[in-house]
Length: 138
Image (cartoon, rainbow, N blue to C red; front, side, top):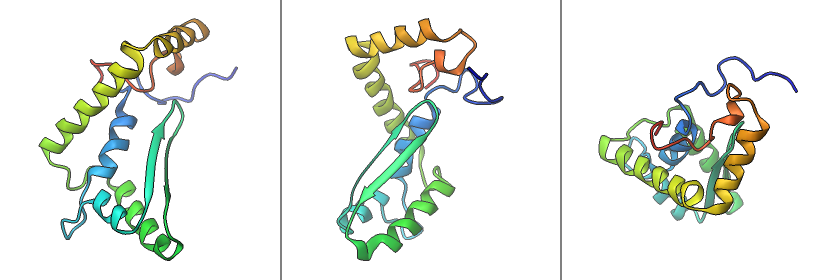
């Protein structure tokens, strides 16, 4: 097994990618239009997920709206924290913390996966730390 690349998910930053994933959808454009609202108007269904190595965003929508989706998504991904106020940030952080509680801290399957990763990877390997973070790192 190859060692992890330097700087990959530095300790203490676990869960940051998942939090930013949430914030991408909460942003507004320069005309103060919520990103999620515009996606609904375009007839899109969408979601995202974060793993140890990647965050994946996807959407399904009518083909005639593809150009606008790509443009808006590229704007959001280029500067995901643009036009995110403190209240929105804190709300989404609480949502991510709640997901962490539901999926890992109070769910047997999540706890089993955490135990398996701790057993399979040395403590200094990034995979030994939870991709979704902890209450402390969030």
